[in-house]
Every structure is written in structure tokens, then in C-alpha cells.
Length: 425
Image (cartoon, rainbow, N blue to C red; front, side):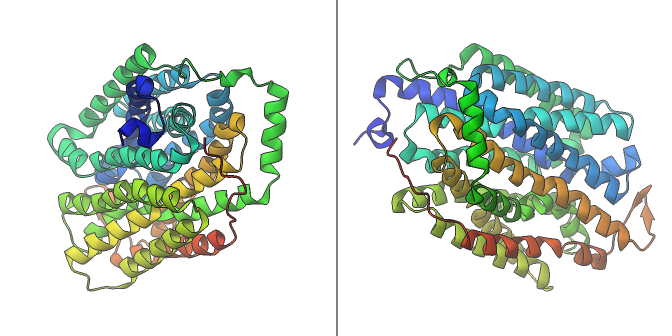
């Protein structure tokens, strides 16, 4: 059986489908890179911009607030406008925000740049899933969603050890300038290459706007939509708060690792996510079940983060293993996107997934500054090179929110239901 037969895509449009998806996934690569980038430049940002832990948490979290705001229009715009205009504009916005952040001389300018980056990045994932829903059959949606998450996670991996090396070599400003130029170039490439839909596909914009909003309203009145979104919020807390910001300083202060070693260890969480997303998506598609993989993955994520933060004498390989396991099980989020997709009508798919993504991204927006505030609350007054130092006890007292969130995710997944309709696509 050929690849096109396995995917259910005619061979004549398979190459174009993969090119279109690849450019969307590449933008999500950049978005994920920007999401975790501050974690390897914590000291530089605190010193250059005069930030406390709470202020740094707020600065980093502005990405998530911008990302969350973008979810409000991205679903409707993806359903109505198509990916080409949306992705190219988003990449250009990211690039401009990146330049502002790289050249910022004050915390206010850096905060604005971070907010703009997040807003532009917020259009990437849902629009790429819209590409998947238009170019590929629904029965492959979870698998291709997982592949999209995998590509994004590779961007997150690039934002750990490789970015740490770039910061050491060129400074954080030089490294971030390079990423901004990449985003600008990608926006031009998307505009020149991407097509919104195959010639044989119906134009999604033909849906009446009043009907679109009516159907979205019906979707938001479903209790399952809210339960799945809440489960998404709780299930990614470790990845977005620990993996994207506080993991590297935790490993340096509590586990006594150097910054390159800590960044390399945190990359294991992202490696786990990268492998877990397509694997869990494939398992879910193969079993034709959504709830069971979601519950199992949430349980695994809870156990792994609980062990990581509560066992004091872990060796380096055990730390890496637990981070990898947590990332792999956290990737069960891919099943949540399949669930809301199958609970919605075709022309509201983008809006449904955007609503879930609001819940997901709010996790980072809330938990990053919350942990920073808890660190400041437990700060013992020490300074080094103009920045605050936090004791191992401070980290232990601040990071309890992560297993608490993971445990909540397990409970919420138990209240989800298998989608009623599973169309073949």
C-alpha cells in the first residue's frame, strides 16, 4: 500500500498537501521556539532589564497572553480566510515583535515585544490544524495533529540547548535578532507558496456568517467543550511553566547542574513531547478511541512530575528519564484536539480548536507568573551580579502547583466522553 493510499489522499495532490502542511508546521516550530526561549536567558534578562522572578514570570507570560488573545479571531479567520493570508501575516508580526524584543532597553519595550511575538505565534497551531482538516481525511486528524505538535516541539528543543549555545556565543540580543529575521523570511515564503485548499475541496468561506456564529454558540453551550478545555489547561502546566521557563533555573539551583546541562536535560521533556504526540495520536486513531488515551496520558504526566519534584536524590539519568516521560504523556493533549474537532461541524472546526487552545495557552499565562510570585514570596534576600538568587527551598515551595495541576487533569479527563460521531473524512 502506498503512502497516499494509507493517508487517504490522492497521489496527485499528496506532494502539495505535504508542502502546505510543512510550511504551517515550520511556523509552529518558530512559535514553540519563542515560547521556551526565555528559559535559557533567565540570568541575562533579570540582569539587563532589572527584573525580579515575578517580573520575569510576567514578561515571559505575556507571550501566552498575546497567544490567547489571538485565539479569539483565529478560529473564525481560519474558517473564513484560509491559511495563506493568516500564516504569512502572523509570521511577519512575529518577526517585528522579535526585533522589538531583541533591541529592547527597558522592561516595558521587552514586554511589548514579547506580547507581539505571542500574538503572531497564536495563529500558527490552529491554522495548521485547519490545513490538516482541509487537505487530509478526518480519520488521520489525530496522527497529523501529533506530527504538527512534534515539529513544534523540535522548535522547543532548538530553544533549549542550541539557543543556550547561541546566547553564550552571540549574546541574547544577537540570538533573538536571528530568530526574528527567520520569521520574516518564513512569512514571505508562506505568501508565495501556500494554497488554502485543494482544487477539489469546497471553499470553507461559503458558510453564512450568522450560521457560523450560531454553530459556535451551540458548541460553547456543550459542557464537554468546557471540560476538555479545562483538562487541556491542567494537562500542560508542567510543559508550559516548568519546561518553558522555570525548569532550567530549578535544575541549576536544586539539582546543581550547569546551564548547558540543565538546558540539555529540559530538552528531554521536549523530546518526549515530540515522540509522544504522533505516537499517542496514532494509537488513538488506530483504536478509534479518544477518552482512554487521554486519561492514561494525563495519569502518566501526573506521576512523572510528582516523582521528579518530590524525590531528592535523583541521578542525572533519572531526571532525564522523568522529564522525557512527562513530556511524552503530556502530549496526550493531541487527543483533546481530536475530541473537540469531532464534536464540532466542519465549518466550525477552527473555532472549536481555537477555544480549546485558549484553555491550553492560559496555563502558561497563569502558572509562569504564579510560580514567580511564589518564588519571590520565599526569597531569602540574596543577590548575585544584580539579580535575585532563590534557594532550593524556595523552588520546592513554589513548584507544588505543577503536580496539583497534573492531578486535576486526571480528574477532568475522567469526565470527558467519547465523541458521538466519528466521520471517516
